[in-house]
Image (cartoon, rainbow, N blue to C red; front, side):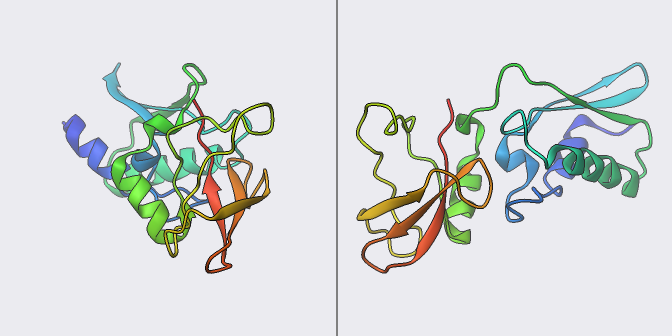
Length: 161
């Protein structure tokens, strides 16, 4: 019998296809691991309901388990509660920054409606003089910014609560 901790360790080896420095555990996409009815059930939640990477993540999870001799497994997609950037691990936020994507700041970006824009530090030079170029970056869960100091463009992983 494989230990539950081993399954979690294997999930740390499954990477997000859109941000390949993050594991599905870093992202907080893997919500639970349970052994039920002689089978492992991995529960995942997408970063947003239309995320095109979820089928790939599901396949990668099952492949990783099979590579390690675990054939009796399934993946269940659960939409509630909805994923939030609060589920990103501290390690994941650090990896995002090192990869060149600004991690989410601790506020919801309502600037398009009525609030002040969040200050998003540049992941390259740490300047707080940045501006949003587009509400949508390379994927829908990111916005595109530019640093006004080093002039580098970068993605910002949007804060979702």
